[in-house]
Length: 405
Image (cartoon, rainbow, N blue to C red; front, side, top):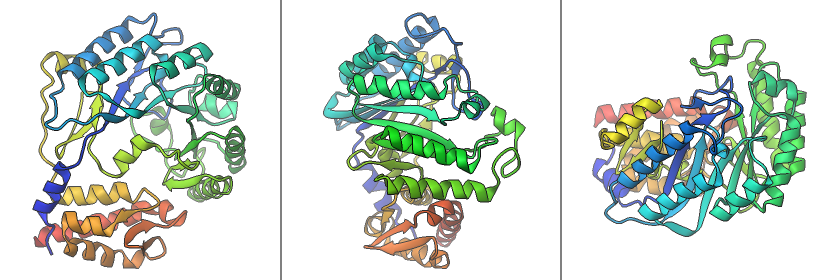
């Protein structure tokens, strides 16, 4: 059984690049669960008074200007400022970045411009300025509504700051707000998680992202704790937290459209869907990743190395992703979505034989996987909970297909 490599390669190249991620790496402190490429500034630094931020933006704009024009460029439909804490930038600095993207690529009408913001790092005046500059969507890093848990995570804000942030965003006429929550935190109880869900529902954000704590080895938590062991919730409690989140948020009218994400009708994150649908995208800034013409490549994760790379001409290395990896990526990302993946499109890209092998091989996971309306998808919540086991089987099947090719 053979993956049709030529069909897979050609279909990718025909897909438009209409999304850009911009990494703003600065934070006041590093949260204890964070392994992102960030630079710590302290509690007083902001875009208006930080030489480090000003220097970084100069290099970032240099990178954007140096990016080679695509053969058939399309206006950007989504831009995402991630971090770090992008809300530490001044309005004028955000305008500079958007201006650079407009100059190099142009921004489509109705472009979704998202910005990650932390409570207690912005005020009403800044929100109004950001909205006027073109920011249409804010992703607010709330994480929890219990001060003791926020302190335990190394967060700089407290629960009251979340409510004040929502007030400023509403008054500043940001009509698309997403709120982040984290489950499985050290010493977090099921009752506390339920309280956070209820507080979030009462605030009625248009979108919610509910992440389970992941222990990365280089983080403070990763060095202190082991998965499933106290003071972390045990595996069954963590699973109950996930089930409770799905139940409560769906009952409150949110669509559970992706493993960790919920949205009111019409408010799914357009930018993040680009990733989950395995479509190409641009990335700019320290540690940012791009997916262009079948190649995945990332910038250096330190400012020194990133600056040297830009000043050296932004040379990009990396080989074209192979057919086996593209098949696995398409399933690994697409099965995160509630609608799953289209078997028809999979057949066109990788060949009907590969699709038949995947569907047949997943038959023993019928409790978690289903085929409906010619789409392969995971059940909610159990399929989402056990997605790693399903994907392990997908990778095994893909390896078997590649070996027999």
